Length: 575
Image (cartoon, rainbow, N blue to C red; front, side, top):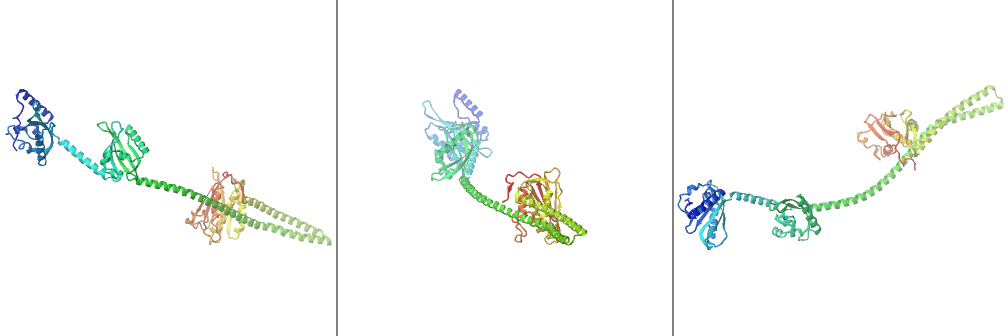
């Protein structure tokens, strides 16, 4: 490539040379390439910086022959920019405009790359304002700027691609002005059409197309919230319901952050998400909850009614169980009374016979020995009758007390041993029908302030349960009642244990359930242990535990407070 003379053309005279030196100094300081084109001479003058920005040595062009624009300047241009740049400069020279020439193109760099150059110039005019043949200008290396712009363009394109492809969303920027009082969209993704039915161009021109879809009260609250966030420079979140141009309604979540630009304007950068489906689901859930609450209320009424019936039924079953216990009590006491009363009747009959003999002997002649024998018989018989009648009276007294306790839930102080003896006495007839022994190992002196009737019924139920279930397939066995008061405890530990066949693990968890029985339909109601658990944990205020292993017997342990908890409805007569 031929060089261009960079010294042949310049202002004439000392003042001209001084101006030239000043211009050259300014060009060096600013690293700006200065050029001058003389159209009459078709001559181009360039400052050294013109070449240094291209990585060339300016001295290499100092002594080169003159070249025109085509041979010098155009030779450095990128092939893709050459025609456009040449035509742009030629069109400027051909025009009579007072504006400046501007062009942007790539020029070859010595390292083999390309430098983006921003060229600006203006045709000089004479004293009368007529255009001269000389045009002067500058070349500035804007490669870094173009690269930055290119990276910015690529970033913007990526942002646009991402924001335009976000499902059910719209990315936006709102310019709120220097004071935050205006609203104008400066960026909108294509999602605005899918969300609001408005094109990007229309929304950029008229933000009211978007804001107008919001109800007036919601819009006022939205703007008030935005003003507060701008004042605090705080993040912004808001849910709105918009009416689209087609009349449909959709819900949107707006999330954005405020910032202040270099020009002083406040802007919101944010995203708007379509949450219509979520709001519909929430409404469905609210409707479902309302329906469920209504159904729960209705079901609660039904369950309460059912519970009341069950409680009534339970009371009836408990009453029947109490009557059954009273029946067993009556049968047991009647059996026990047979012996002393029978003995008394026998002795009374014997005395009657002795009296008749004595009367006959008196009529025929009473002897001293007959009188003595009669008196001995009367004394011995009287003693036997007295003892047996006393035993009967004792049995009847215990029966009266136990039956009174069974018939009503009266709270009173009592001795645990006395209560257990009465229960054992009552259960003895049933035990005698088997080869099972019933042992009472309860020490005296355990005083309780509780409900003896329910506690007696509990013991009878546990003994009866052992008689029915514990010794299946066995001819002999032992049931032992024991009690103790652990040191420092306010509850007596009462145990009913047997050495029977034990309870299977699967049944052990269910033995207190109502209507659970391994002999249901064979005489077992499945309510004895359930009523036992209810009485112990309810009225007596204690707890009951069971310890059993198959083949090793069972132990029912009752922890009964020495003083039963106060129950206002406990001291009531039985129905």
